[in-house]
Amino acid sequence: MVSDERRAEILKKLSEGVVEYSEDMVREYAYIAVDEGLDAYDAVMNGLAAGMEIVGDLYDRQEYFVPEMLMCADALYAGLDILKPHIKKDESTGTRGQVVIGTVQGDVHDIGKNLIKLMFEVGGFTVHDLGRDVPLEKFSEEQLRTDSEIVALSAMMTTTMLGMKKVVEMIKKKNPNVAIMLGGAPLTKDVANLFGADGYAASAGNAVQEAIKMISQLRRLEKKAVSS
Amino acid sequence: MAAMTPKERVQKFFKREPVDTMPIFSGMGMVTVQAINKMGIRFAEVHGSAEYLAKSSTLSSDIFGFDSVIVPYDLCTIPEAMGRGCSIYEDAEGILYPTVPNKWENFDAVDISPDWASKARMPLVEQALKTLISEGKYAVGGWVLGPFTLGGQITELDLLLKGIKKQADKVHQFMEKMTGVVIDVAKRYQALGVDYMTIREMGSGTDLLSPRMWKQLIQPYLRKIFSALDSPKILHICGGTDLIVELMNDCGADALSFDQKNNLAQTRKKIGNEVILLGNFDPYGTLCQMEANEVPDVIAGCVEAGADAVWPGCDIWPEVKAENVEAWVRTLRELGRQPSPAVGRI
Image (cartoon, rainbow over all chains, first blue to last red; front, side, top):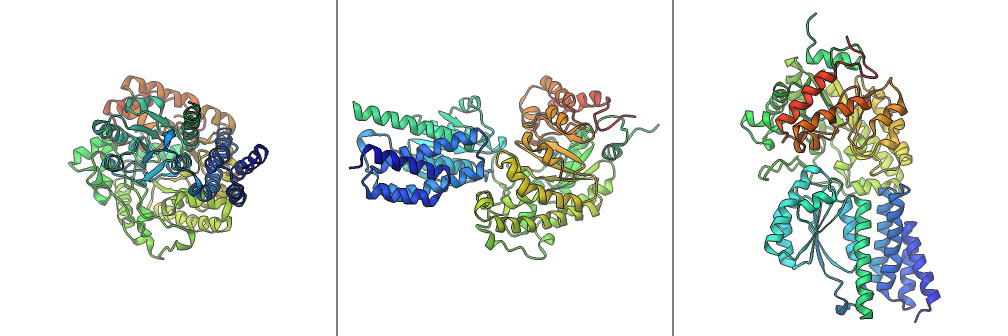
C-alpha cells in the first residue's frame, strides 16, 4: 500500500512528465507506480490526465502550440501503455463505455480527433476509431455494430462540417439515446445545437479541454458512485 | 479614356499604378455552382479536364463580374503527381473537394521521381492556364501551396509537427525539398504568363505553430521562394496570423493575404500603408450563409480596415448564393473608387 505522500510524489512526476513531454520520465514513473502498488486508474487520471489538463491550459495561454501538445500526448500514451493493463475493470461505477470516433468524409485532418481519442482512452473508454475521410453512413453502421454510447465526429473545414448534420440525423433516427459530440475548428456551440448534437469542442486545444471536462465529470460520477 | 479591362486593373494594381476602382479578384478559387450548372457537369468532373477548368473559371467571372480567373481548384495536383493519389468523390452527395488518400508515413519513405511535374494532372493544369492566358480578358492567377502546407499533404501532418522538435534535421531537409518543388512549379506558371502568383502557406498559422517556430521553420523557406520568383507575388496564410504579420512581411512578397481570423485594421497599423494587404472576409459565411443585405457591411468592413483589395479569406465555396456574390461585387464597385492605403486611383 502506497503512502499518501509517496502517491502524491508519483502522481506529480507523471503529470510533470506529460507537461514536459518526457516519455522517459513518464515511463519511469508508470513502472514505479505499478511496482509500488499505486492504483493504475488513479495514476492515469490523477497523474497523466492531470498533466494533460495543465497542457490544455498552456495551449489556451499560447505558451504551448500543437507540436508541444502532440508530444505531450505521446508522453501520455507512453504511460498509458504501461498502466492500462493494470486498470481493474469495475462495472459498478458504470463510467466506462464505448465511443465511435472519426473525421467526416472529405476531411483528412485528424490531429484534434486523435487527441480526443487519447482522452477517451485515458478515461477507460473503448474507442472504435474509423479514421479520417469516413463516409457518413459508416458512423451509424459502426455505432449499431458496437452499441457505443458516444459517437464523436470531427471536421476541420466548414464545408465538411455540413455532413455532420446528416450523421446526427442518421444516428438519432435509429438510436435517440446515443450521445453525439462534434469537434473541429469551424464548429460553434450554436451549430452543434442546431445539428442536434449533445456536445462540442472547437479545436485540438479545446478538444483536450472538453474531453478533460468529460473525464472530470466521470471522476465526479465515480466519486459519487463510490460514496453512495 | 477607354475603360480598364479586368486584366489591366489587376496588373496596374500590383504595380501600384492608379486604378479606376478596386479590382474584384482573389488568389484562391473562385469557381461557382452557377458556372458548373450552366456547363451541365458535376463538380467532381471539373478537376480532370483542362477545358472544364478553364471554362468554369471564365464563366464564373463572366456571370458575376470578377476581374480574375484562377485554376486549379483542389490542393491535390502536386501530391497526385508524386504518386500520393487523389480522391475525387464522384459519387458523394453534394460538393466535396478532392483529398490526398496516401501519405508517406515517414521522411525516409519520401521518394519523388524526377519527372513528377509531367505526371497526373500537372499537364492539364498548365493547359488550362494557357487557355485562360490566351483569352486575355481576365487577370490569370497562379498559385502553389507553400512548402510546409505541401509537406503536410504528402506526409502525415503530425510527423511534421512533432518532427520539428524530435527530428529537426530531417524536417529541414524535407522543407528544402518542398521549397524546391514550390519554386519549380511557381516559375513554370510564371513562365506561362500568369499575372500574379500566390503562395498559399495556409497550414502554418499560429493555430498550429508558435511565432518562434514560424520564424525558424517557415520564414527561411518562404524567403527563398519569394527571392526566386518574379513579381507580383503574394503570401497567403489562413487561420491565426495576428502574431506573425511582421514576420510574414519580411518574406519578400509584394502583398500579404489573410483570412477572417486576422485583425486587418491592427495588421495595417503594425506594418504601415506601403504594403499591399488583401483580405479578408469569411467566404462561406458571407457568400453562402448570411442574407444578401448583410453582405455590404462585411465588404465595407474590409475596406475600412485597410484592405487594398477585398479578397475572400480562402477559396469560395462553390455553392454561393448568387444574390450574395452580386452584393459583394456591387458594393465593391462603389466603395472601391476610393483610394486604398497602398494603391491610388485615376
